[in-house]
Length: 426
Image 1 (cartoon, one colour):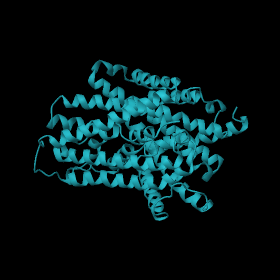
Image 2 (tube, helix red, strand yellow):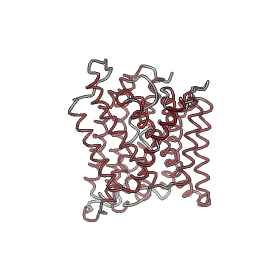
Image 3 (cartoon, one colour):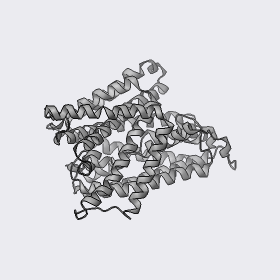
Image 4 (cartoon, helix red, strand yellow):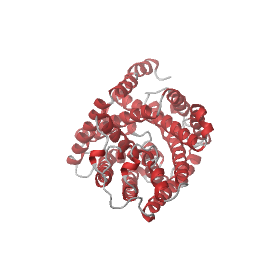
């Protein structure tokens, strides 16, 4: 069984990652006003917290591992449940590929000679962390707890460095008129914020293996989100206070640029190293959680039976291998923006079905014992559902080509499902 410390480490470490280091520059290009910039991050965090408070009801109801699929399977039935599990698995595999690609891009900034080997290096990164799962879940859990503690301390350290440094320019306000404009620009802002805050339900992928039961997991998810919001908002506020946001607009590693301006030119190297370490920590967590989606599907007869087999070390090894194989394919065909928007489309789909799942199960099973109940239901649930639907529609209109890729990958679920049903999942 996994400890409560692991649960909190997953809840916090599952969210904090590349996004908070990279995406502020993308957002500053559209929202250069410091007050609006900080308000965007704070309000987005509160919406994520509200969504977590709602979906935690499903977490409390579900005492099995498998993440989104396990949470909503009984609300939607076999085929819709399979589609949800399929999309969730694809989103995690896309994230594995995305983070492996970006880790090697950052490594190339430190060691320019590595630039010509970025794709082979990304495949190597993915392969190493897949291989770690052969040793069992205990090793991965220890790595994750240590990595989360290091990541949290790093974020706090960067915040303090910005607060204590002399601001690069004081008393100069930037104008919103200087911002980038257009549907595509705002689409990138939305994708960046969603991606940076994603991971708020990571603990649910291990619910059946955590001490204390599903109710404790639900409450820990909420605690983890609160901690991350505080860390993010303080860091973003320190960033906006220390440097003119216009100077960071479009910067691929905005935090490095800010620290370089107000602390030392060497600070950018420190941030790059920290970014790589965060990405590697996420590879570990992704390879722990992604196979558990397939394992949950296999247990219900909705994936090849071998994907449900657990090794002596506690991991579904065949599911690990399937996840690794698809990640390698995505690494070979995708770049940063394709994988970012593709991942976000999958996330938005899953957020909508999760919120709707709370409403469906409240209607169908009103008397079921709930270790945790959504606060202010149905108002909170309705607000979250409408909010995620609006965001999803906006992204689909703004990034229609990537939406088409996502739709094709989802559509493939139908022949896969029919094939599994006919073969008896053997």
